[in-house]
Each structure stands twice: as C-alpha cells, then as structure tokens.
Image (cartoon, rainbow, N blue to C red; front, top):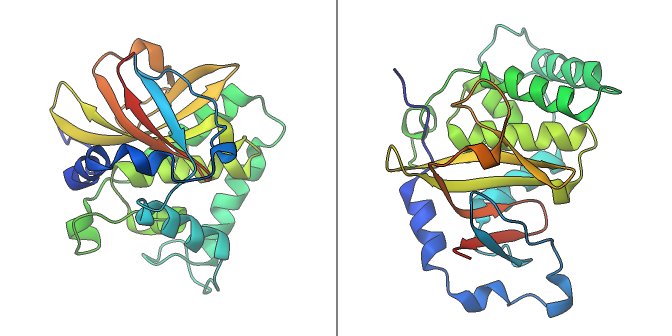
Length: 222
C-alpha cells in the first residue's frame, strides 16, 4: 500500500528550531488569532510568516494569477480546460451547506494521484499551487494547499482554515493535512483518509505548526 506522505522532514525540524522570539516579532496588536486546541496541543499564534517562504511564495503565485494557455484536459500541463473544470466543480458547490462542501472538496482533490517532490519537481520539498497539483499530481502538503484554496474560493473564512504540518506517531514520519473549524470544532481533511472526520477522533497525529494566509501557530503541550 502506498503511504501518501511527503512533506520534508527538514520543514518540520526547521520549525522546531525557530526561536520563540520570532513568534513575537510582529507588533503585539497584530497577534490576535484565536488559540485553538488541536490534537491535544495548545497553540501560540504569530503574524510573522518570514520563516515560511514556501507557503508565502505559493500564496503569492496563486493570488497573482498568470496567463493560462489553451489546451485539452488530457494534457499534463495546466491549461484553460483544467481551470474551467475546477471552476465548474467549485461553482457546483455554491449554496450547499458547509459539511457538504468540505466533503466534496476533500473527495475531489484526494482523487489526484500521489507523487513525491523529487520525482515531480526534482527537488526535496516543493509547495504547489492547485493548478500544479491538479495537472502534475503532488504530495501531502499539495493536497492540503489545494483544499485550503478551494474552500477559500467557496467563502470559508481564513481564520477557520489551517494547513497543519505534523508528525505521524504511528509511521514516525512528517505529514501535512488541512484542518477546518466549523462551529469551533476542528475537522480533518487528509489525503490518507477518504472521509472528513473530527480531528478529536485522531490520536496518532502530533501537530508541529500550522498556517493560514495571515498567521502561523506553534503547538505545545498544555
């Protein structure tokens, strides 16, 4: 059975090595994100995303936009056909309730084939935008990013979404997932799990850090 992990262990270790001072390098008034428990851990929030250039670079590429070439949906490069297909999928979910939307997004993006970064991009760790993930396949953080941006496009609040980098305690390897908060409760969108499940039911994940567009969170024991 293929293990669909793939985020670089170096990314996890880099976060663990970050000085605590970096958390508070942003102005005190800017550190206002809700501190929510996740997988039994508490979080410290910061608006200083300086150390996360892969994440901020991915967001910049996504929001900046770019010309998309014409082409067939059978092509391996992302083109207008792929863009229209993804846009039609998201439009089909507008007006649906939140649980239906997150289930559909999780299912739609989990059908993308898994491929590690060294094979896909020739480097150890690459964070892809959704168009790259849909056309070139991807690893665990690429699924999480595509789900994050899909839900943002559907109107989910940035504050309710987290791309979470964690350690799988069973497999003893790093992993990345998306967590969505609904009515204050965290739900897990994982490329390893077919269905969306409450994060509180998962015992073998230990969060290291999480990210959204404006904040990052460092997790620690209560």
